[in-house]
Length: 307
Image (cartoon, rainbow, N blue to C red):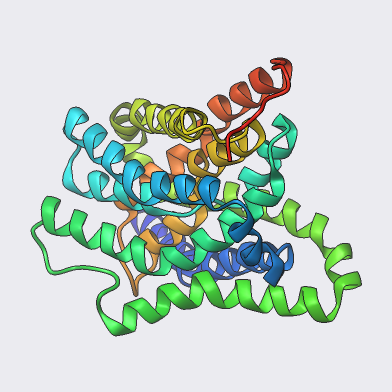
C-alpha cells in the first residue's frame, strides 16, 4: 500500500515537473504569439499621436503600481515568498484580456494594443528589476532573475521572441492570422486556467491559508489598479475612451507570465511565488467585469479635452 502511494506521488511529481518545464512555457509562448499576431509596427508608432495618454498609463504601470503593491504587501505582512510573488504580478505587463474588457467597456482598444506592445518590451527590463529588489528586500537571498545575463535572455525569449514572430506572421500572412486569432484567444483562456490550476495544485495542501493571505490582497490590487488606471488619466484631462483603455491595461496583468516565471526551474523555481498570480487570475475577473459593466452603462456628455 505504501509503495503504491509513493509511486502515485512520484508519478504526480513527474507530471507536475513536465507541466512546469514544458507545457507552461509552450502555453505562454502561444499566448505571446497570439499577442504578436494582433500587433503591427503602426501600433508602436500610434503612441506618438497620443503621447500624453500613453505616458500617463506607462508611468502608472511602471512606477505607481509597484508602489501600491509594496504598500499592500507591508500592510498584510505577507511571508517573504508571497510578497515577492505579489511584486512579480504587479510588474507583469497587461495582456490580451485587457483589450477584450476595454472593447466591452467602449475604450480606445487601439491604445490598449499599443500600450500592451510597449509594456511587453519594457517588461524585459522593468520586471527583473522589480523582482530583484523584492527578493533582496524580502528574502535577503542571492536568487534573482534579470540583471544576470543568462536569466535576462530567458525573460527576453519568453516575452518578446514569440511576440516578434507573431508580428512577422501577421505582416507576411494576414489571412492566416485572421483565421487563427479566435482559436488563439480561446487557447489563451484555457492556458490561463491551466496555469492557475497548476500553481494551486502544487500547493494544494496550503491553498486555504494562501487564499486567506493573498485573496483579499489580490482583490484589492485589482480594484486599486483599475481605479488608478482610470482616474489618474481623467484628472490629467485624458479622454474618457483613453482612460478606459488605460484602466484595463494597468488593472489586468499577464498572470500566466508571472506564474511561468515563478514556476520555471531556470528562473525563480518557487510555487509559493506563483500563488498570488494564480489567485489574482481568478479574482481579477470580478472587479474588471463590474467596472466594464458600470462604464458601459454610464453616459457622459461630449467632452472637450485641452490639447
